[in-house]
Image (cartoon, rainbow over all chains, first blue to last red; front, side, top):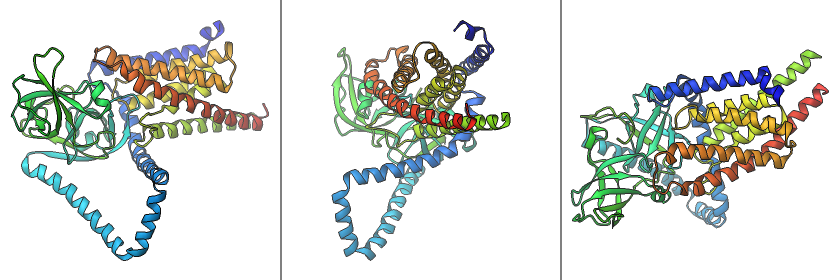
Length: 286
Length: 173
């Protein structure tokens, strides 16, 4: 082993290690967390990730059908035999209807806030190191996406842009413990801050903290963004209150909030690249 | 003869590199989960290469795997690159001086590498900041990842060994 540490290969590996460390220091110094090298790799990998993502989803759907669908497949075959012609028309109709509803939901958002500018995106990867369902999308700097931009679906807010490359971006979700959003209970007009916690994130939930003890917030109330800090537009749906509890010290209340979209399976998103009064965020969720 | 040997060596490492890319894209695919847990098969690959080839190759493939993982992660660049380079090199040295290149050794080393990576990521992302309940993530996220990754290590050891043996048979070494 002593020969190894005296050899050329050790020196080469040590040089590479120092080089990577230098890149890391550079990434930490400029606050982006990424480097030219990582952005280049992400840009090259994004198209392939999109293809693999679609293919793996198809395989997963097929396997799910095989495991659960023996009975369903038999019933489906019977229905197809009886209603072949009508089912073909129905499939087309449902497809157009679903697309129309999705686009109409986006149009509602646009009509309510015409100053909003969007970049549509598709989820192409999931971060193996993250515990809060962060994901990679196929829109990046070339599409106008910037660090700190809010990310939404037709149902509501799902996260913020954490890092960008030319053709892709990494998104941290609202369940992340490092993400907090100024929020408001529509029914009671109470203001608070939503934040992720480890325990709630496992169930796909998040916490609305700093409600006053006199708050009348109740299950069923809709929680939206308050626009505080000008890093996220107002009135984006964050979720629905499922329960209201006193905090550990009894000084205030907090609500458990259920996001409308399942952040573990979201596939199509919109990045809000510009809105009225937007202030560039140093990092997501602040 | 030298040309033939060089050709097959290049072919072998090309296969390793393509396998690394394939495993990376697979591990990042949204649907690549088992009961909500995700594996990191690239760890199994560079550990297997390190054990069956040499520590230098293991370090280089570890670095390559780390660069790919860093490019797709929200954490700061360089964590996976540096860790995987060191672990790839260390696995090669361990298999040279301490352990035999066997499937169970590959499973243990892969699990150890995945555990170290998981612990470091956990510390950087959550431990340093003192988030309440963060320790649970070790049980609910890190441990399943380690187990799944170790399973991949077992399979990839056989795959890399068969590739290596096939090339050596052609080289005649």
